Image (cartoon, rainbow over all chains, first blue to last red; front, side):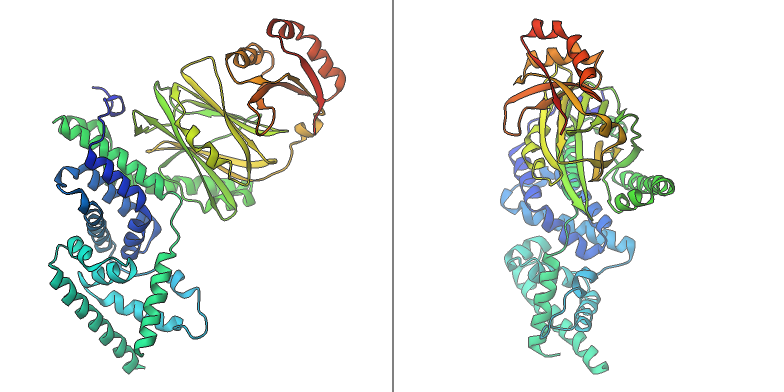
Length: 176
Length: 321
């Protein structure tokens, strides 16, 4: 049997061409999303690799090219959640990046860690909603497609997430 | 904590998130995943999934495991290397590389080789990155648009004054990496990079010219295949310092003529190399050899009278700068 690299290479389909373009254009964003879940460079690379691979082999499921990016982010999130479950660790942000800069008037490193802890306490899909809305700055309608939730549910869950976050932070304040 | 503080926190964390350092190997990881995904997709399309899955050799978990093993192997090799050259090993040790380590090349008289004999290899890309002061050039190999598992058969040679590293890949018919040459020239270490025409249509060659002497380390990787060249500033070898005079041909455009001259010299003058006349020039010459004295160089020149007459070239000697 011929090795795979000697097989005839098929021309990419329109979906595949578009998908590869989106992957290449947004690979840094995909990495950042992955990293925010798994908090390790090597794991985040692994998540991106797995997600891209899955996206390419599942491209036949795509009927509408306009949703390629949101579909891809959904895969990355799923892979990242699987990985973080496997590793039993989830952190929203790079702790070094969080604490390396602190100027007067800005929030203290301690407060940043409080927020980080509060974010960590959020359950899915609340973590992802906060992540996508505030860190990736995605519009609510795109988040709805990514999370496969009605827009109204995204809004209400996001509101609930923020409220819960506030409770968490206030809890820290009260404790202090 | 008041609302303003919380807003400031969110903004700061968002900025930190967006400023997250993107690893240099991300692009390679993505390209590898695309290539493997495409391969799997084609296999599915041909309804031969089961048969192909046995040979395609791609299993994400096993790749992950192999990568971990590669890091472990690299660690062992570096640990061994630390005994020989602590500074050198320490400076290179922090750089993660995609794939499994096949070997760290050992250079003898500036030469090293390795890889697997193939046919139809495309030297598909060359990328550059920098980490903690160490520059890294990564050379990738493909077959039919898919990353090769093993590097194609290669020979690498480092020479001094000017400081060059030539890459020769046998069984290769394409050099798509030429598209990356302009980008490679942006490296602070790299002065020039160009293809060298060869008479063998199943071989590709190219030359990197460095701005000064370098210390280097090259790792051969597999799954996916790559050659990873790590560079630090270095100094001239004793052998290079003893060479004062260079013997070279006149300059002509790259092509079969130059390749024939080089091939004629190859056996008797193994250090002959093709150099660009000037950074912006389209003309190249063959540096035949470097000599300690003018009389040695002149003797070599006299022995090559027929080369001059047969090829319409003139030979000249010059002080090495």
